[in-house]
Structures are given as structure tokens and as C-alpha cells.
Image 1 (tube, rainbow, N blue to C red):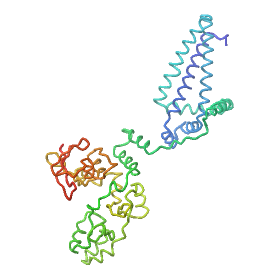
Image 2 (tube, rainbow, N blue to C red; image 1 turned 45 degrees about the vertical axis):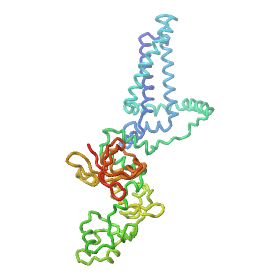
Image 3 (tube, rainbow, N blue to C red; image 1 turned 120 degrees about the vertical axis):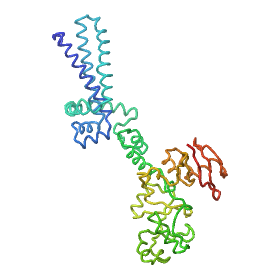
Length: 416
């Protein structure tokens, strides 16, 4: 080596700096690879993607190989720099060479390549995988010795490198990925994905139609009134009860009454015969579980009961699906029948609206962990039954109570 010319030595030194930059940058690139994006590239047969994935399955071997190569190159570069320094400046030049080489390696072989690799990991990781895969096979005995010694040292500190850590995402982590995806996911698709994730954290009680608002067929009514109700109903299924929802007898599909209505043969007995058995579900059932149960039991309509068997309300398959894909409507002004906008810009809102629906319709962030309806939330906030005309500021939203009914808030007004 001492017989080489200065030009050759400088050339070797430059090559070593470039190789050091490759090893340093590729280490960062491989470790920065997004595992899920990597799997996508593998499915699309991206060159080097599968090799990179296999290398990352054993990171101890990969790191051992990279550090072995990088340290050897840096030490070799230091030796070359020392020879050059001795020729140019004698022994005094060794210290100068050490300082200059440290600066050069720090800038050109560490900071710059690692920064670029962190910003564009795939551009360097995949080509590097093509090089590291055969290189690992050649240098495996040395890498094995290095890793074995390292494993012994780590075990002294109670660290087991064979312990596998799962890369599976928790629900909250997946939510963060979807939320932070930005323009990569269209707004509508993002809302649907978040809606699916929310199904596990919400219960049927959160979105059910309360019992006191449930429309149904009252068998104690006159048959002509029942016929009008069936003909004008906007629902596909209606509960059948005697006097009140607590005495529910079944659920009837409107289309099943068409023939009897057409032939003027509809009677109370016919309605009872056409009605199917009610499907009862606990109020604390998660929406995700209920969606599966609807599919499993071939049902579209369920009656929600509490732990004492008291009927709290009803829920339909459409209600659950709307939590994922939004309201089944094309007119934004009809997004919620419980919200009406007046000419002056103010909003009249039924206090029976659920907090979840209100948040979704007005883009509010009212808490959903407590009361399920706006009426309940206002009552909890005031800790008293208000009078019509009462004004309050509910979580920074000015509200005026317009109408009361049976000690419950019926209608409120919001001024924009």
C-alpha cells in the first residue's frame, strides 16, 4: 500500500468514503421502510422489495452485516488517510488527517446520506437489498460470530433478541394512520374508514331511536287508521304493539301487507299473523357486534332492552350502516330531520336528537360518553329542569330552550 502513488491513495480514500456513505445511508433506508407499503410493493413485484422484506425479518443479521462493512471501511479509510498524511506532512500530519477525515466522514458518509435516505428510503433500500442479500451469504460466518457475541452480551442485560414483536396495529394506531393520511385518502373514504373503526367503541344505545319516539302499529287503533299508517309510512319495518311499545308483539314488514291492503282484507288478525317475532338485543352491544349479528340472524330490525328487560328503543341495519357511510340522502339540507334551518340562519333542533348525530351534522365535538341525547346533555349540564326561554352556553355553543314537554326539553334554538 505504501508503494502506491498519492493519486491512487486519494482515489482509494474517495471510494471508501462513498462506500461508507452507502452503508450508512442504506442502514437508515432499510430501517425507515414502511412495513405495510413494503408488502404492497411485494405484491406488485417491485424489484428488491421482497429481498428487503426478508432482510428485515432478521434485523440482527442485517445490522451486523452493515456495521461490519461500515466499520471495516472506516478503519481502512483511516489507515489510508494516515499514509497520505505521513507522506505529505510527516508524523505531525496524522492528527490533521484524523480531524479532516472525521469531518469528511461525518458530512459525506453520515449526515448527508442518512438524511436523504430518511426522506426517500425506498430509492436506496431496494437497490441495497440486491447487494446485501448475496453479501450476507458470503460473510455469514463472520456475521454469525459477531451476532453470537452480541447476543451473549445482551443476555447479560436481560435482553432476548429472539423475542418477536408483532407489527400489527392497534385500533387507535390505525385511526391515527387514517387521520394523518391527508390527501392520500379521499375525505369520503376517510370518514368511512373512521366510521368502521368507531363501530367497536359505540353501542346500540348510542344510535337507537328512543322508545318514546318509536313509530309503530298500535293494535288498539282503528283499522282504517292503521291502513293509512301503513300506506304513508316511510319505514320498511314497523313494530307491532298493543297500546305502547312495552307490549310489543312483533315486527311487520310493510311490503308484506301490500296484498292485504290491495284486496281490502287487512285486519288486526292479519297484522298479527304477518308480524314476525321481535328480536331483542342488550343496550350495551357494540355496533360492530350488532352488525355481525344482523347478518348472522338475517335481521334488519332489533328492539333494544336494558338489563331489566325494559325496552329502551329500536335500531335497524340502516342505522348501523349510516354510522359508516353517512346518511342515505342526496340533499344536504335533509341530512337530519331533527335539524331545521330558519331564514335568519338560526337552527331549530329537536332535543331528542342523539349527540352523535348532532356532532356529525354540525361538525361539533360534544361529549358522547355520558347522556345519549341533547335533552339529556342539557339536563345534566343544568342539573335542573329548565323553563322555556332559558339560555345557556353548552360547551361554547349558545343555546336557547324554545319548547318543553312533560318535563323534557322538546325544542332548542341556536343562533349563528
